[in-house]
Amino acid sequence: MEQPIGVIDSGVGGLTVAVELMRQLPNEKLIYLGDTIRCPYGPRPKEQVKRYTWQMVHYLLEKNIKMLIVACNTATAYTLRELQSTLSIPVIGVIEPGARAAIKNSKNKQIGVIGTEGTIKSEAYPHTLRTIDQSIVVDGLACPSFVPMIESGVLSGPEAEEIVSKTLKPFKNQKNIDTLILGCTHYPIIKDLIQKEMGSHIQVISSGEETAREASLILAYHRSLEQGNRSPVHEFYTTGDTEKFRHVANRWFEEPIQVLNYVSLDPIQSSAN
Amino acid sequence: MEQPIGVIDSGVGGLTVAVELMRQLPNEKLIYLGDTIRCPYGPRPKEQVKRYTWQMVHYLLEKNIKMLIVACNTATAYTLRELQSTLSIPVIGVIEPGARAAIKNSKNKQIGVIGTEGTIKSEAYPHTLRTIDQSIVVDGLACPSFVPMIESGVLSGPEAEEIVSKTLKPFKNQKNIDTLILGCTHYPIIKDLIQKEMGSHIQVISSGEETAREASLILAYHRSLEQGNRSPVHEFYTTGDTEKFRHVANRWFEEPIQVLNYVSLDPIQSSAN
Image (cartoon, rainbow over all chains, first blue to last red; front, side, top):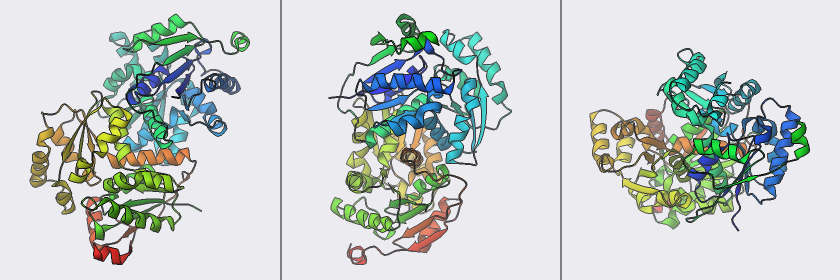
């Protein structure tokens, strides 16, 4: 029987990872779970993020997933190692794939990272990059205005351009980076704007693309790639309002969401938090 | 004790993979073995290539390698599956990494592959690409003049430009590809020439870069990355003339080869073939 790939996120941002998985692995069925009601995870204490993440993981394990993608930077930073050492299926986060792609690309070993305040403060990217190569210089920049802008549907036009331009100013002309990691799963939605602002000499790395690429390798490595010409029906679950979820998703992507369900995860916790 | 990564090739071409491994994984020690005396493998019967490859593998296993990179397209096509199912260490070839990178990059799913006659005839790239996504259109082109040109040191200038231009003509303007895989480990040496000829709208994928990227992931996945700030002394072995090997390598790369040794693999076989 075909086993799906599970994708978890604190909300809708991880859909950029899901879309790349569908594109690069067209035979694989996905089950996506977004914890929209408790989003964002960034400001929450570590222990709480771990509890929420495990609730999502248990929900997907019952659906017999063969691989877990943690498509959320905060959840990756706090839970990846624990999930990897506890679960018997492969677990992939969104930080390492972007880091490895940046190392592959960068010629001058000067790499920029943009993300939420939480991700930049956590130093997760510099840590991962320097674990592989201590000589890499990493410049981080928090872009707190990007997620609200993207979620409100401002994806192009003068307003979006101005916000992007203002936000990225510290990186333009002042830093010698040749590679920029989009360290937030929302950012690929405005990748073109960011690329235009940074200039064509900067390689912009989207974690979603790179995470899907690494998922492809790990499935091949474990001989568990689906083959043939399938048209899997993906399933999407949200802990929040299904119409709002569908609305955001359909504004971002060409293909409408197929199966969308509401799911309640530990409702006492979620209403208490 | 630190365990090295083993790299095998039929000759010097795999050095492009070795150089990328050194760049992307600066803490890892490499042991490279090039079977220069019996190069090229392309025209040889499958069973012979398998026997030669296994001789190289046994030689490196005695050096306690933690991972094997088969940096040769012919050896990858003929032996990868067997090596992967027989050895207890991870084994990575050069075909799948390039294929996955091309799938990640291509927007129109039209991918070109250039390589030796043997590699193009073997259909190894189309097969690998379509195993992941049946809808991909692959155009292959054999470039028999590239390896002799590169090995003779003609790496730039009018003569090289003319050969590259003539050879790639069938791909220029006539094919709708947006991504080109360099399906031969020699070709990265003239990547700039190929990129210039194809135009900046074509993404040129170098298997060496992608193979090193995937080696990085698999080492991280197995928790066997070397960390800290090491300066490993790599070792190079050739079954052929050491001075010739050093000469070619030093013409291609900035850093001179450190330790270079002659090694005899089954000399009766090699002199008989």
